[in-house]
Image (tube, each protein chain N blue to C red):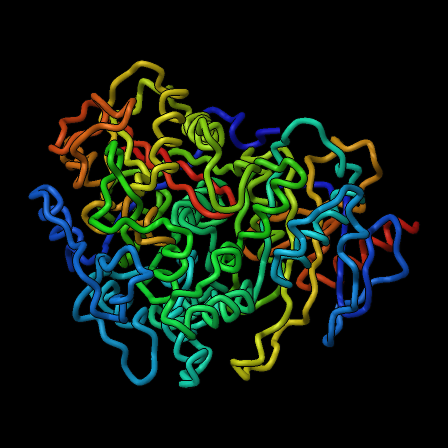
Length: 238
Length: 386
C-alpha cells in the first residue's frame, strides 16, 4: 500500500506551520505557543470557544493540513477520513467534566463539557467544519511512537475505505492532577494522504507500509514522526 | 482507488472469528448471556455502585455486574478483564492486539479527582492494551481504538483489514467499558437516560440505559485458522465507517451517514442488501438514534422486512464495548438462525413494524449486519458471515 503525502500541518512547542509555508519544524517538549486558533479559519467559528484545549489544537492542525493540501474549501461533503494517534486524548476534558459532577452529585454536570470527553470528539468537529465524512477515530499505542495514526490511515486508504485520509498525532500533555510525567511532547501534526498521483499539487513524498508497525518513506524505514516531517520538508525544498 | 476492493474476492484472504467470549451484567459468559437473552431477561436494575438518589437524576438504573470489585487501587476494568480472559483459550504470541474502549479505567479518574490517588496506569487510553498485552505475553505494540460507541466495531474492522491485507495472521480484538458515575452524570446531563429500562424502537422510548461489559474476539486468516485447527465461528466479511459531519452529539436526521456506512460495508463484503438475513442494530432507545437507524435501514433495504433487533434492553448500552459484544452475539444469531427478542419493545415506532419484535425471530440467510453510532457523528457497520 502506497500513498502520497500532499499536505502537512502542525502546532508544536516550536511553533505553527504547514508544509508549503513554514519556518522549520521541531517537535520538542515544552509548552505549546499561545496561538490564536480563530486566525486559521477564514469564516467565524464560534464552536472553537466551546472546545477543550485538545480539540482546539486538533481541529486547528487539521485546518492547516487541509489548507496545505488545497482541500480547505468545499461545497459538498467529501469522503475524507481522519485517524489521530494520542497518548492522553481528552483527559483534560475528562477532569474538567468530572469536576462539574463532584460539587452537587451530578446536578451541575455540564453537558457542553461532556460533549468533548471522547478522544474522537474533535474529529467530529473537524468533520462538520470541513465536510469530512470518512473513517475517523482515535488510537493509542502501548508504546507511543506517534506513527499509529498514520499507519492506520494508510491501511484505510489502501483498503479503499476512504478516497483521502488524514493521519497524525494530537496531545496537549498529561493533566497535572495525575502527576505523571509527559512521555510524549505536546502538539498536533497531521498529514494528508492521497492515492499516488491524484492531487495536482507536488507530493512531499510517498508513504508505504508492508508489515504492521512498519512505515517506509520514499522507500526508507521510518520510526519517528519528526523525522518524517523533516524529510518531507527537505523533499519540498529540493 | 479501491486497490484491495478492486481485486476479486478469491484473491482476498478471509477473516475468520475463531473464538468469541463476553462478560455482561446479564451473563458471565456468552452462552449464559445468549440463554438469558432468549428467555427475555434483562439485567437493568437499580444502581448501588454510586449515589443516584438525587432529584436531578431522571434515571436510577443501569445494567451493572453486581460483584465486580476493585482490588489494590486498580480499576473495576481489571476485574472485568480477569473474568473475560479466564474464558479465553490460547492466543498466539504473534497476534496483533487491537483493544477498544470509550473511557478505559474512568473509575480511577473519578478517585483521583476526589483526591484519592490510584495511579495513572488504568486511566490512560492505552491502559487496556497495556494490561492485555502483558497478561497474554503478546509481542507487538498493541493499540487501543477510541471512537465513542463505535469503538469496538471499528476495532473489528481494523483487525479484519490487517488480516485481509496480509499484514497479520492473527488479531485479538478486545473491548471493555464499565458503568461509572462519570458516564451516568454525562448522559444524564444530556437528558439521554431513560427513567425505566430502555425500550429500543418502541414508540414510547425515553432514552438509553447504561450497561457494562467486555468481549474478546480472536480473528485469524483462513489459512492460519485451518492450519491450527481452530474453530470457525464466523467471518468478518466487510466494514464501513463514516461520519455524519452534522452534529457533535446527535445523529443526522434521515440516517444518511449510517446508510453510507452500511453501503460501504456491503460493498466491502461484496454483498447485496437482499443477502443480509438480519440486522443487529445499535438500538439505544433514544428518540433520535432509533429514528435515525430505521430511516437508514429503509434507505438500504427499502420495503424489505428483515429481522432487526437490539440487545440494549437486556444488557444496557455498553458504550465502547457494544460493537464487540454485539458481534459475539451476532455470530450466535448466525449459528442458530435465530434473532433474539428486543427487550422493552412493545409499541412499534413508525417503520419498526415487521422488523423489530419482542419475540425471537427466525432468520434465513448467511450474513448479518451490525451497526453502531456515537458521539462525534461516527457510524460503523460490519457484515458478518458464517
